[in-house]
Structures are given as C-alpha cells and as structure tokens.
Length: 223
Image (cartoon, rainbow, N blue to C red):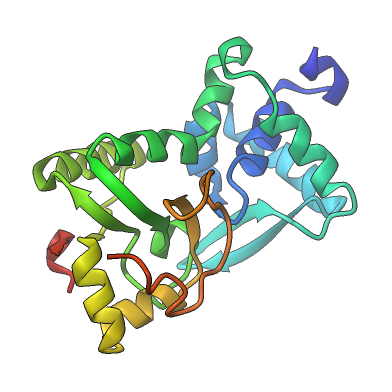
C-alpha cells in the first residue's frame, strides 16, 4: 500500500529511516546496510529527495551524510505517516529503520535510566567524542554488553558515558568541563524521565536537567 503511494520500495524505506530518526545523519553505505537495498538504487533515490529539498547533505571526514530537512514544507505531514505505521504490520526492514526505538529498548534493559541521549557520531557533531550519554542507576556490565552489540551492528566503535543521578547533579554544580561539553553538543534525547514520553530530537542546554539526582560509570575511559 505505502509502496504504491510513494512509487518505490527503496524510497519508502529511505523515508522511514529519515523520518523515524530526525536529526540523525547517515552516509550512503550505512543506509544501504540498514534498508537492505542496492547502492545504485539508494543513490538514485537520495538524489531525488535532495532535488526537492526533503533531505539535506553535508560532507564530513571524506563522507557525504544525509538527513531529513525539518524545514521541508510537508515535513510534519510526512513524518506523521511514517512514525504512525503500526510496528506489527510493518515490513521487517522498516522496523529496523526505527533505530531510536531499538536503542531506547536496549538502554532501558540496563536498569533505571532517567535521561539518555545520542551525540557524537550519531549527530555528526565533532564537539564531543561521546556517542551515548546515560544518567541513571544501571547495570554496568549490561550496559557494556548493549554498547558492544550496537558496535557490532553499526560496524564502528561507540564511546559512552553513564553517570548515576547523584554524580550527574554534582558535576553540573561544579560546571564540570566534560559534562558541559557533552551537553552543549548536538544531541538526540531518547529518554527523559521527567517527561511522560521520551523527549526526542531536541538540543538540551547546559543545566536544564540539574534536578536529576547521581554515581558514575564511564565507558571507554571517558570522564
């Protein structure tokens, strides 16, 4: 049904990937792996979407990254279509395009997560080398396993930092440089315990979450 509406299976998968992960840039070969389509077909559809302004592109580290353009005229209408697709009835590959849903589920399995966001390589922001930032009382071994699984699937190393609520608040009170730098970078908030639903795809300014309580585990030696 959706393929008939949009005229191409590859296009539907691309739109699902972009609209279910706004703020998340992808490079071509990463896209082909995620949607399981031929690279020539992906390049052709990316060119079409670029020509109408639905997506934007930016070069970084000898790669061209693509992401959905939130200023596109029909952005909200299209996003409502692809985010409202029932997961049970969706194509298995389309399910996999909901990357954040998968990450949220895995992070929640590590313990009581109050606040978590994606940054660094997920947002193509080089102001921080932290890719996953977590605040909560989590099982350190389980979190390390979750990150290792994501690394294998994404075929790249991921740096992560996990602070207990008490440690997070303490570092905020000291204007800790590490925490300040991480919070100032572009981020995709996937879990916010102060909201009824996950607060996604927003930039959070330093100090906004000072009310969260805290202890610490730092992944990849990042502190």
